[in-house]
Amino acid sequence: MKNIISLLSRILLAQIFLISGYGKLGAGYAGTGAYMTAHHVPIILLPLVIALELGGGLSVLLGFQTRFMAAFLAVFCIIAALIFHDDLANMIQKIMFMKNFAISGGLLLLTANGAGAYSLDALRTGALSPKDAK
Image 1 (cartoon, rainbow, N blue to C red):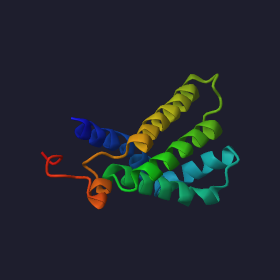
Image 2: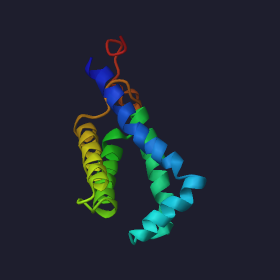
Image 3: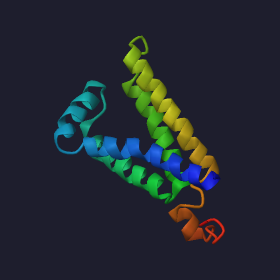
């Protein structure tokens, strides 16, 4: 049961990064760039943010280099909360701030516990045994 829950947790955590990164491509690029600029963050960082969200989301989803990427994404979420959701008098911004911290909490659990048996990390290290596959 633990391995199934770990897989489900990775899917639920990864989806926000994959959807967010994908949404910044195309039409969403200009709006995100303007939002970043309004918060004094250079727009030149936007391609890196997109790459981190898509690459990090995929890494978490597949369970590849999970501990490292989950820790990196946790720090990213905390920094994003502090920069972009700092108006805590505004209820929406306060919710977004808390959402980023909650996501960081889930990512830190992945950092501490790893991806579980149903992951590329487990296949790569030989930790997935026939017993785990049942």
